[in-house]
Length: 545
Image (cartoon, rainbow, N blue to C red):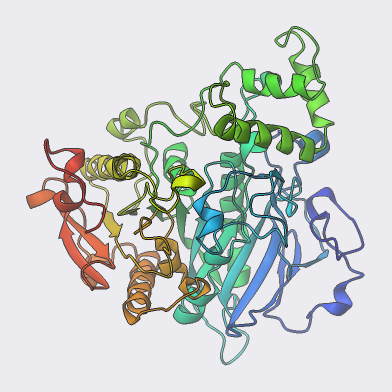
């Protein structure tokens, strides 16, 4: 169970709670012991930033284990238990690829913490588990729902709910470069929540026996948003001022969320960094459940006709330890890349079900079936550099430039198309383009402003990366943090802060905020100068503005 330091197992939804461990927790500080319907959660103050309090592991749904494996997340029961939230819970079940990639070779602190496990282990992540549906909360130390002390913040604070990326295969709360303590310390005016959600075959099984129920990662995300809406006031957050933010696969999920809940999003704004529902090549198309059956048979759950025996197949797979499943799927996928590229692909990611994920987002834009809330849409100048597979023998040279450009446009052009569609609906949209190229963040020259590198700026985690930190890097981080904070505090305020709304029909394609280029923390450039290659014949994309 997540809270292995806790001794008393109680309700399934609070399997980590323990009254026996309460003597070691700070129950006397009302700021650290927060009571909710589902229990009292005890956090601590951040070691580096003592003006930030943190609750590292809070369950938001019952553990999806045993008979609840591959089912929709279930609401927690009422509880009076005390929960130790001072230690991170495990990430959701996932695999550590054996493929040497830039994420482990050169980029620091971007993977879930696995406490000594090799970054290229080729086995299930040792700090992952199925009992993983938890979130973490960072607030200013003086944020309070009660205003009980002279120094307490009386006003409820705006809230950012963050979804990590990882291609629907990896990700989780405990990723060093995505911990928001520095940003919360610097602002003292907002709260950040990060959530785990199910990935790979555990989040997206598409099994025949589920009769169409699936996309459990997307369902988990909604459950987390609902939990935050219900409980964040107890931590000093304002449920009426919540912003959903995601990066990469998390950005795609955040964007798709706006279509899944057009009338009841619960959030009042969204930020998508390097991801859009219009990225057509993302996700799988296995509506017959062939991939799940392939894995089931390889692991001994073979009952002949998969359609007739779909329930037996599913129940059999629910009895197999998750590590065996993760290892088989992950090692098969590694083998497809390293050894036998001709073997059939085996993928488990989100796919259209016309409830959580839709097949035609362009049409849904045309029909106006999207949440009518403001949005920030961002991309990076060299999205494709870190996403391209580079054999070690060619590592110093990096990927071919045409590969970087094509990989980058996979993000830039859907971002442009989303912005045009939103503009057509009259929805406030703000665009940014991260173009900073700092040596400590990209220690090999071909990386540039790669996919993910803007997160160092917003989270303020650039200090994790080894090497010299130039003043421009610090200034750019502060400018980006302040603009993001302005947006989550009041989504309508950016124009007054100098960041104009994006309008597709404006001269030269509207305006974008470009961060970290030309020796400047920010400048506002024309849309055509960034994404003209997406819609103007003959224009070439510039990966190093």
